[in-house]
Image 1 (tube, rainbow, N blue to C red):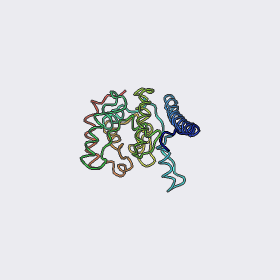
Image 2 (image 1 turned 45 degrees about the vertical axis):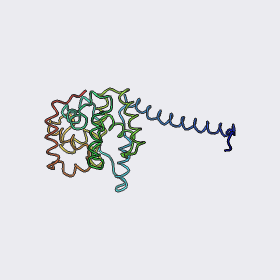
Image 3 (image 1 turned 120 degrees about the vertical axis):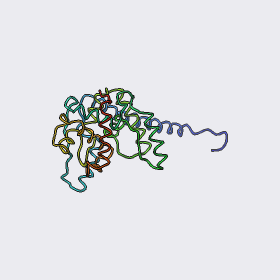
Image 4 (image 1 turned 90 degrees about the horizontal axis):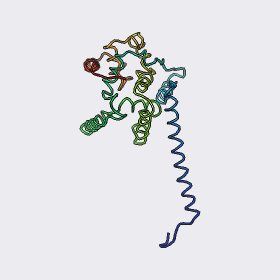
Length: 238
């Protein structure tokens, strides 16, 4: 554009409209997430984005595949499993506001030392945000959206509801979701009757359940189970 000339009024108007539409689109998209967060504060999720993705993967191999899951209320989940999940995944769960900044810093340091991603530092609240709405990808956009949803979960739900939903929707094996289905699969028991060692063993599978289910009594998992068992009595749960 020659010096001293101003943009045509129509061009400016078109640019403003484009920006306004983009802002409106972002607002509506975030409002969609927020609406579901509010709804699920009182209504139990029937399925999640993560479940839907896993089911699609299973049905590529077997069109009749179904997920194994069964909802159980917080009061009917073993206290040992609640403590084990917190001890294994997020020992500051009841104290933080969605993010464990010290844990994130330690994870970054470990990743830099290894030269690859070996630790994430995600809290239970962050993991729940991802499982409910997002994909497992590690893109900056996905992580930013996860952070926004995490803030809403922490603002609108109490810690008891966050842990209740987390334990009912988290993946515990191929096509296996939630504490009840996991307890039935691995111990032929209900989620409410799990003992300390059983609970600890389930908790240590959470980072990679589809890999660990092949050998849930491997030397590595045995060691991790013992470590979580030792920490469980110090874990605070809602």
